[in-house]
Amino acid sequence: MSNDSVVRSTAVCLRNLAVDLKNKDLLGKNAVGDLVRRLPGGEGAEGITDMTIGAILSAILEISQHSPDTCRALRQLGGLPEWWRYVDVLTFTRNNASTLETSCLLLAGR
Image 1: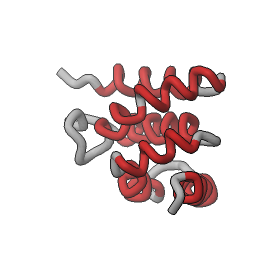
Image 2: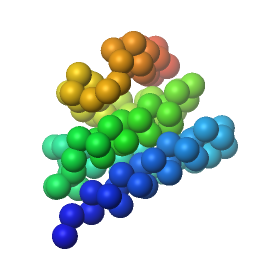
Image 3: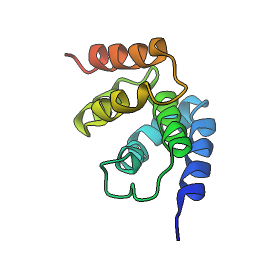
Image 4: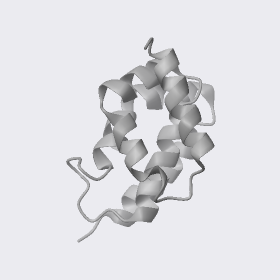
């Protein structure tokens, strides 16, 4: 049985929760690793559709914005290469992806 719809719904909920700054900090500490692992190539990526990948990337973007600690964690987990692999496939604009990578690299001290 595929868990695609559960993963997609969870990613959308996490994205919505990340609008609040306190939630964003908690999600950055606890959820980013699980989200990155759900991207193709990760442990829990079997049966994940493009719509779910889009929801996961959207959640990662929302959680990472204006959060240096989350950007460092994302970089250490290898989430940025996964982001770039799917940017062109999904409905994200190049500007949003570029903004995320640039802010993460700057905030992570690279």
